[in-house]
Image (cartoon, rainbow, N blue to C red; front, side):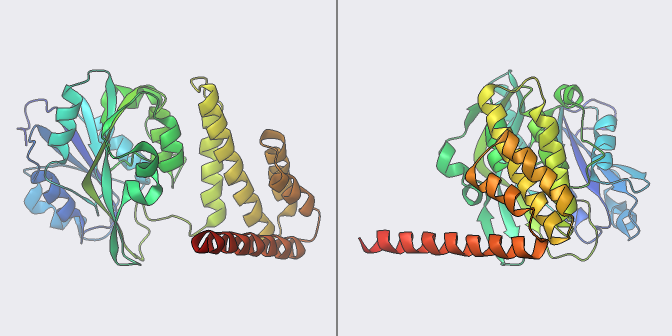
Length: 340
């Protein structure tokens, strides 16, 4: 770790909120890095537990910033604004890095000055199933991209389909972060994906298949910075529609990227429409289904639009039966293939 009076090469931003039981482990994993030209900035987003107290013994190694609770995006943006370095890394306060993480990234970056972002694979620990998962294997990215680490000229399609860059895994050029507009503080979930998609249109990435980050998905009761997924399905899908709708209008999109983004936007509009039907908001749902028919017409999208004129309960039963029929056909086809 560099001394306080000189500019480091990497600024590590750790946002935290009521994670006193985990945050020191995150800090320790940065202090254990074999690469040492960095500073650590811990942004405490209004914790009401003993986060400040447990960090006391680390104050000579970190810059501790307390702010009123404003959310994950605001906490990360505060860290970026306080950072001194040319490159910015993020680490959630309940996750950890392997000791070689920064060293591998800096070495890869040194070979290609055109890179604006480096991301790595991760080990995803899912507490509800009690096992570790290789993230790139889990998403299917390894199968499509292969197992060789390499630079990617146009990473957006991979980011949309597989979410290859998580904030915990990425090392990002500070200038590029400001160029694309930092984290969107209007988003309380999927703010990582939103930023990474914008970054994916702003330059060349390097993707390392090495698992250099351990991402913990615990069954927590607190409303932690990054643990709000799908408690409110409607809000979750609204956030995804918002970010992909904005992305679809980005003038940097190439034609194939535009198609992928539009397909993804329509998928989430459909999912949001189905959730709205469950809560009997059928007119809003029908508007979404109509937009999907216009932007990405298919038999399924047309059918959902037509069914939206029926009472919500009847529509949901029909759709559920169609899903069961489709699953049964898939099982039958798989069984027939296995016995042939």
